[in-house]
Amino acid sequence: MKRTFKGALILLLLALLVTPFSSALAAAPDGLVTEYPLPGSPFHVAVQDAGHIWVTLPAQNAIARLAVTAPGVYSVLTYELPTLSSHPHDIVYAAGSVWVSEYAGNKIARFNPVAGTWTEYTIPTLASGPTGLTVLAGEPIQVWFCEQTGNKLGLLTITSAGASQFAEFPLPWSGAGMENIAATSSNNVWFTAPGREGISQFSLADWQIGPQTAFGFAPTTPPLSPSPTSPYDIKIDGEGFPWFTEPSTNRIGRFNPATTTSFEWYPVTTPNSELAGLDLALGYVWFTEYDSSQVGQLQKLGYTGRVRELPLPGANPAPSDIALGPDGCAWVSASGGDALVSWCPPYYRQLYLPMIQRM
Image 1 (spheres, rainbow, N blue to C red):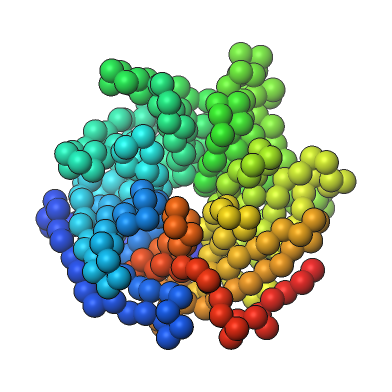
Image 2 (cartoon, rainbow, N blue to C red):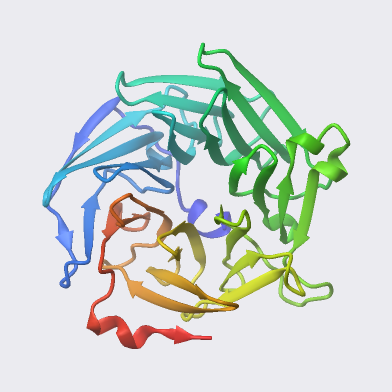
């Protein structure tokens, strides 16, 4: 996926540490979609609550917070990272903090939104290229992350007293190109490995036995298949199984060991859409289409599904990520339009009903 939208994010330096930004709202005619302009190109998005949304701004070496206080009333604050040209990549809000992976800075950063302060943790492996991260709140806090260049799975633990420690787990195979990660526990950690055309599960409890036992690998391409796959984003459902996007094959997959091939596949209607971000909420799979500038819902119906898509406003919004809020609104980082986009219930009006695809 970095061949497309990640590569388009050019590193620049943000002049101010905290910069307020606001502008007039641009809304879709049907009132379902609202744009909130940002002072840069957002990549990943995280929801704090219904009124506060966070994004990474890689080109500005910053993160931004959108605060919506009433319909049409909002503000944006940007916060520069302490490390210059760190290329903030993924972002998560958890345990009262904002967590950021610094792809070029080789650090995991923690931001205190109340105090407005940063704490950075340097990853032991040099130039490890951290990409996706996920946070398990508890005691201690566990921050799991992908080391794309280092070809390792990383774990940062932080106690309530502030003590921190890194652990790194080298992958038993080379060239995984790790992108995104999800976890429900230290024994159910999943990540995408587009460099090896598959997804992997990790269990900390099995690590003492050996890497081959701790890391399970599920190839998403059948042997001798002429079409290479590239699993990108990943989330875990209530059954403990992962869902993921596949940009190169234009489909959404679910790992299910009870099936013959261990996978369920759900093609997306628009061809060559370059599927990107993914989230699971309210009984739907939510996804973005970077090249076709659309967002969509997948409703699982047994082993089939129903897919709906919705074009976003603007010349080239190029949505890269999506996250659901507690009010049911989906928040989309429109990296091509320098904006955050909210997509709220009822999501579709009668106009969109013919866009249903049944499989």
